Image 1 (cartoon, rainbow, N blue to C red):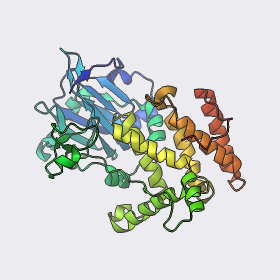
Image 2 (cartoon, rainbow, N blue to C red):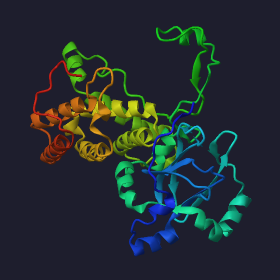
Image 3 (tube, rainbow, N blue to C red):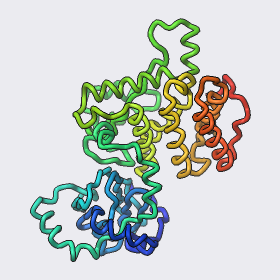
Image 4 (cartoon, rainbow, N blue to C red):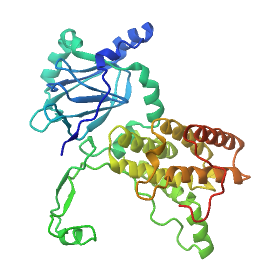
Length: 386
């Protein structure tokens, strides 16, 4: 269902080129920069790449001078007459040097499709002199920010997490549940038995890693269960172990050399970008689960020092992109991230075994968060806190 169109930035890909770019950088990107060409995009369509989006004009065909590497391309159909905007859809692509990808806008489904023939692609490459004037320039001034938010995401991450359709959608693509579990699916307190049971279209869901349901190892004593309930290190260890097993047993050799620590950070970044830019709510929930787990670790601060050093850096850049009230629960009015960080900072301060470098990094991060958001971390974390 279309939603009311929100006021967008008034700049366009071509106007972004007016932002001064170092001549040497521009010359290099003219040769090494990638391009995304999309044929037939209707005027007014919301189109974006990474942290920039525009309502495009009638001459728009894509974006050029894209720095090689990972990027997120997204779009939304717009009904100009009714001033409404369709849900956002996007895809990640790891652009090679000088690569040009070509897609087509399908007006029947109001979506970008990848069905342009090799012959047409070859003809378009030969006609780049004429196409070039219809391509906006990638806003290079924002690339550094994008790198800070996506630095851990690799091809291996995409292979592991992307939906089979390769598309990230802000709204779930639901179809009737044909598994025969309609009665069970509609038996919940919030379900109307008169409505058909629905499920996500196969292959359309992001394949996030599930966290361990048990927060303590089998055979734990009551005292140990209590300890593990307050310290999520066991849960983190299980997650790291599952990453290592996944690379060793399930996926291609291109992923076998991936570091499990990096992939935990990559999944946090992937989830953050999918909800921040892709507007995917399930991604927010996964990002929240992972951040809560990381901030609840105690022994892990010692066991996985390098992981937490990178985690704090990553969280610092992520928090620069959202307003302070973004993390407040609408129902309870509680701020989950403030509570999480309070636990993290308290665990770092109170442990004598935590490395001095990590202590210093956490202290600087705490000072930064306090200054930017006005959150008070001086109070002790209560046992009743979430």
